Amino acid sequence: MPQFLSSREAGFEAAFRALLSAKREEAVDVDEAVAAIIADVRARGDDSVIELTERFDRLRLTPEKLAFTPEEIDDHCARVSPEDRAALDLAADRIRAYHRRQMPKDTRWTDPEGASLGWRWTPLSSAGLYVPGGLASYPSSVLMNAVPAQVAGVPNLMICAPTPDGVANPLVLYAARLAGVDRIYRIGGAQAIAAMAYGTETIPAADKITGPGNAYVAAAKRRVFGHVGIDMIAGPSEILVIADRHNDPDWIALDLLSQAEHDESAQSILITDDAVFGQAVADAVAARLETLERRAIAGASWRDHGAVIVVRDLDEAAALSDRIAPEHLELCVEDPEALLGKITHAGAVFLGAWTPEAIGDYIGGPNHVLPTARSARFSSGLSVMDFLKRTTIARMTPDALRAIGPAAERLAIAESLEAHGLSVRARLERLNE
Image 1 (cartoon, rainbow, N blue to C red):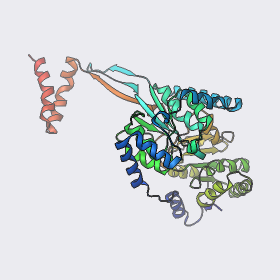
Image 2 (image 1 turned 90 degrees about the horizontal axis):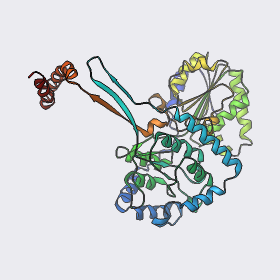
Image 3 (image 1 turned 180 degrees about the vertical axis):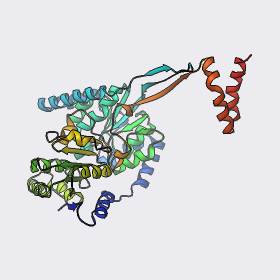
Image 4 (image 1 turned 60 degrees about the vertical axis):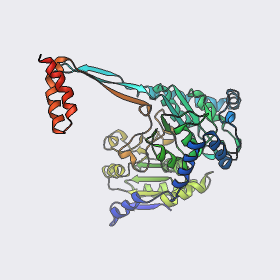
């Protein structure tokens, strides 16, 4: 059974704080192992990657076999059914159209002092995209990572996707082709992150690494950050649904289970202003768990981390939501737009009963790589901005330097940076000759 909380009851604040602070991942000390893997890949390159792939994925490779050949990609893509092909085609088109609208514009202007100022945007030179393998092999993640990079104009893209026992997912390779990525390495884990960060004889180094992964992948991304960029350190999935009684309890139950089935550490929370409705949703979840294919995983998630919170009104629901800062937030209320105006912190918001979160995972258009573990308070989901750099531009005229240069000189003197001030003073003196 999930936790049942009511904001009207004494002790609610303490119980809610405990829910927020509860650790949802088992403490696994992988950092030492990851550090050793990274050091070995840096020292031995391809040989290290090949040995580690054989150890962890039971697959013996050679440098020539690290990447899929064009013929192998063709062969796997040919295995994709027409129905799956059409679904992925539609998803790619919608994701691409959405992300094209995110592209920022270069700007230049002249201020009142005559200085020309502005900025320009340029793509990263390269990006490495990590795609989990095995049971957690998701073609949707390929599109969500690769399409924004492609739209941003990154010229060099590669994918690392492990193939345990040599088994590849044709949908992953087809999604990569749709996103314009033809360099796909069949390696995974911390060794793949190290290879993309530092390069090997066969695998080029990337400027940024994006994509989800297990604890070893997350630890490796933490360690290589600074040498390369990363998108984020993602934790277990989570969903918060704010729903009033004007909803089908079974629909809401399925939305909660859509995240619970990801992982036993995932979290699904319902906030409602109607206690009877909250119980009806909990009953619907229990009924669905009787037949759900991944009921063992979803059941453990709902039992250990799920919650039903009853509040006085939707204003209180919005305030609690901002404290949770959920990865996914559904607003299943009569006026979702009005409630949206009261929400500040959420990775992605889904408005109304006809917008299940699963639409966002696959076909809606916005990115499904989102901040977790309350990090939506200070970060955003993956976008084209993750694959662009902003460079500021400034150009002084003599008159502009005459107008603002003395202040710059004064501040340099105040900071005891003599050469800074002299670099301005020399030019001002020339103007006064």
